[in-house]
Image (cartoon, rainbow, N blue to C red):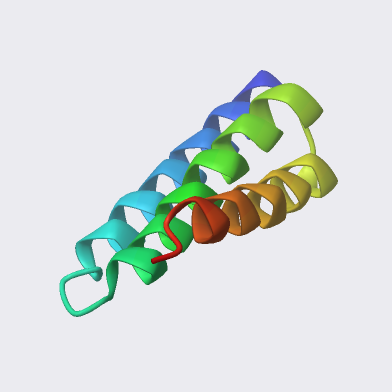
Length: 71
């Protein structure tokens, strides 16, 4: 069980870093949405511990990041 959590965190971390590296041509609102989704996914994985928590956190974080960075 612990090994699965470690692998999940590593995968989430890698995907978040890769998506942030691709932000060069994005607007600030798109960057805020991507960063919010990444942070939300990590938070959802930590708090929820499962796939549903991760996806829910990513969705909520993406919406918050989108709204906070509105012009």
